[in-house]
Image (cartoon, rainbow, N blue to C red; front, side, top):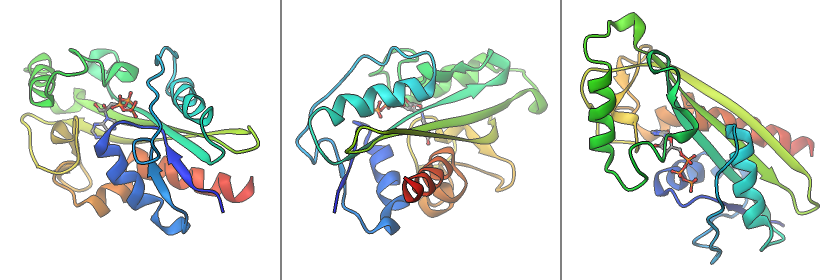
Length: 196
Ligand code: ITT
């Protein structure tokens, strides 16, 4: 039985991915846990391209199934920034409290209906025989007016989901995974894997 190695260095993603893929009955390892180090340049123009770049870089070292996630936050009022640059926005090592405060500042005075935004997630898989699969999903929401919640990671404290009346940082991990871009894209990937 093959294992799944997840090509990400983001601990927040690893937590969510292990929960979402838990019912596959396969061992899920982060690339760190698998002892693989890869940090390819994410120079693709799309989420799918970047996810494939990350998955291929790790697939070069293993016969296991390799998956990768490329995701981002698109804020309509900011012409869909930070988008594919979400991790690099204001610098990769800048704390999210600062990045979130900056985005809230850029939306200062912008009314509710113009604060629409979405998280996007592309999942790529490279199978042991070299076949490649990708899936994509989104979650629609609005940028809030202050950081709220301690859960999740990254931009979650400013991403408000109207159906819940909460930010994704205020949802439980189970609730977030049911409705999130990552939860939905990984569910689609599970279906693709069953057909492959
Ligand atoms: P890997 O490339 O190692 O997977 P990364 O953090 O660099 O980790 P990305 O290039 O895909 O990953 O950047 C995605 C960024 O988008 C991520 O760092 C967050 O800032 C943001 N993001 C994506 N999904 C998110 C989520 O569920 N909650 C909050 N922020 C999210």
